[in-house]
Image (cartoon, rainbow, N blue to C red; front, top):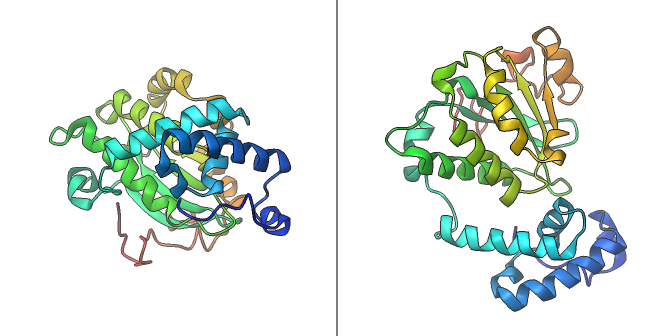
Length: 258
């Protein structure tokens, strides 16, 4: 997130990151507003500010409000700057999130097994929210230069009402939309059981329109062919007909999970 401003760089460098003249102008305006209210905003680069600006359809005031809310949340929820493994150990024990290759345009992939998620009685909702942030930060750290988004494969194999956690789903959705705007590139939802749709109808109204456009429900018969449109076979997990074993950040054949 941290880095130099590109607003005052040469136009050629700005163009490399795809900034439009309007975006550059508005980023300058936002910076002036932000720095008056929270000097720590200087630590964030223009790419970060642009994501918030785009999330609010280039409305400067709304983007500034959203960013200030993010800064306050980050200081309160993650006072040490990051979530440690010890803070999410019960969630990690469920073995439900894997870091996994990249798609055809370089966006890192994560596979999340919804059928392995159960309400965490020991850590409760707060630990689950920390786990969501822990996973998102890990995922964002894998995004290469020139990319800003990631891809999620949400696998609901084995999902049942014992996995149903509407409060947790809404909390995760809020974190993603409010504090990680313009990070989700696409969400593939696979192996969808019919019973899941009851919960989906409860969550759907809280999903913003931009996020809805990135969600793809994949039919079982078209699972491999659909995923191969975005992911090369050597990057596609073996469980979906690809060549890559589930692997973690260090690329071990035996899955290292979050």
